[in-house]
Image (cartoon, rainbow, N blue to C red; front, side, top):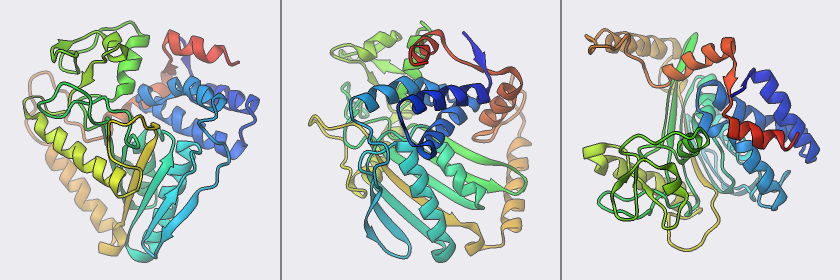
Length: 340
C-alpha cells in the first residue's frame, strides 16, 4: 500500500485529466475535491473515484465544460441544471452562488439537478464556513442508487442520502458534520472490498434480511442492502433520509428515489446562513468555543482520551497525513497506474 503526499496525488490526477483533455480549471476543482477527501481520511470519496471519473468520461456520462444553466432565480434562491458536468465543479459553483446571495439576503438556497456525483459533501460546506457562514448541504442519487433499506424493509429503496453542515469558528477549524443517513456510505464498502476486509456487523443485510459481513454481497444479484443508521433506533436514520430525499430530490427537480431505471447522479440542495446577519461573528464564535469547552469537560468513558467534536477526527487525520503521507490501497493504486 503506497503512501503519497497530497502534492503527489494532485499531480497524478491532473496528469490523468490532462491526457483526457479536461479543461484545467475543471480538473483542478475535481482533483482538489478528491485529494482533500483523502487528506481528512474520507478515502471512500478520494482518488478511489479517479478510475470511475475516467470510465464515465469515456462513456460520455460526464460532459466537461457543460454549461450550468439557471432555470429559476430570485435574490435569495436559484435552481440550476448542471447538464451532467463534473459534480465537484457544479457543487462548487452552487455553494459559491449561495454565499454570494447570502451576503445580500442573509439566508440563501440553491437547488441543483442533472449533476454527477459531487464526492465529499463536507468539503463544500466548508466553503461557506470559510466565508464566516453556516453551510448545510444534502444530496440524493437523483432517484437512483437505491441501495439502502427503509426501516422495517430488506430491499434497497433509498440512496445513502448524505447530509453535511459546517459551522465557522474564528481562528479554528470549523465544526463539520458530514454523514450518510445510512449506517455507512457505499464507498466505504468499496474501500473494504479493495482491502480484502470483512465488514462490521450491522452494515448490510442480504436478500433474506440476514446480516452479512461479506462486501461482495453488496455487488451481487440480488444485492445486499445497507441499513439506515441508528441501530435499534434506525427509524430515525430512515426518517432523516426521507427528508433529505425530498429536499434533494423533489425540491430540486432531480426526483426522489424510485424503481425505474434512472441515471444515477446527485440532486443537490444547498442552504447558506450568513452569521453576521444574525449577530456579530466574534460573539457567535465565542459562544461556540464556550459550548465546545463545556461538552469536552464531561467525564469520559473508560478508554476515551478526549471528547471530539464533529469533524475533529478528520482535521487530526489531515495533520497526521500531512506528516506521514496518504495511504492508497493496492487495488486503487493499480487502477490509477493503468492511466499513467
